[in-house]
Length: 183
Length: 382
Image (cartoon, each protein chain N blue to C red):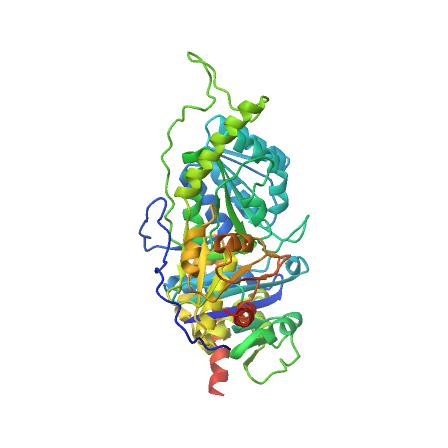
């Protein structure tokens, strides 16, 4: 099994951080994992993305051309990454900032007002963590408890004061991901 | 897609070349590390005495890691005023017996070519890490493999070669840093570790198998001549007779390296009718392409050279024996494919698929290229 996730949005939305948390969770579960950030000119233009591949065997291509999951947090990311989702894959859309439709019916769509939920949880910078929660809630390819542990590890002693807030943001997103399964 | 109607015939099962330095069982605890950081820490752990560098994307984290770790260990870290200065500092430190690491990315590596030639001529060990980016010129900061010919066919001027090791994962990069120091000191030669921007920037779990290397005091280093005749380290031999003698001695070293230090790995080669040849990040893409091709019924395999010089030519010949087509996959216009053709000597049709400038082949793009190569090899009557 190999699962690829692309997370994309503005710089400052915590994109790389959310990807690292997901990668750490995979590591804690004893899986193979590869995390790669965008570091090219697009990053210098103010947008950010990262790819996380989780597998139970040696990971092949770091370049993802059929993403199992894409999490898009701003309109340019929607335009760029919606076409890259594999058939049957999941697209998580931050509806607080994105009005556009993906324009395809062969993928699963999970619409979550991530920025609004992040604000309610305490800080709109938590938007990526909310979105990660929604993704894990819907597809559960890592365990939510492992993500809690990963959050604490990545935030570490230096940002220990953020652990409660980040965990709450993840849980809010997780609930949002679950609710739409029931609906 | 063409249906295979004929088995490839029995071929040796290629898992990996003999390991140069012995296998170590990975301990269970793994940590996530960036490639650049893992390469740097592996050098610190191996006992690197001195690091010289100058910042450039996409290898900057390597220099940053050394800036913090080398002073912690009481060792030498210098961010030089330029790449030229850094490599010439390395020359001096190596002559004085230090275990030296230098790193940069493509344009910076070009600046170091002159001193690398001097070090090869003077038989000074150094490990040079090239985290390749797009070129030519200042190019882009995207991952590329356009420096293959530069690394394997000389780099600087004159009749010399250096061992070139190409990791395709971060844990392999850690092992190859250590092996690079071993080779550099075993043969008194510069060694290039050839990585790319993706390997430098990605994070993967690594087992902290960082190991210290024992170090002897060689009998050639310049450490003060009190009580003994002075030693001389130089690349200048004005008399052609003397220089040819020196060059012949160098060539004898290269022959020993070529005979003893070839390394490679293979995947799914036993029944492969189409053999991909790729190294580094391109080999990772090729691995996924092989899986997708096999899911479609195309019997594909992957041959992955780990030493780019010396090129594992005989192993590639064995791997491709009976194959219908060989496809080199590179992040370049087609550089390693020249060595593939030299190795196979026309025995199997050789094709190439590459992207340039910081673009990386996609797995589906490679599968398409495999289908085309397959069709062309059928048309050419094979």
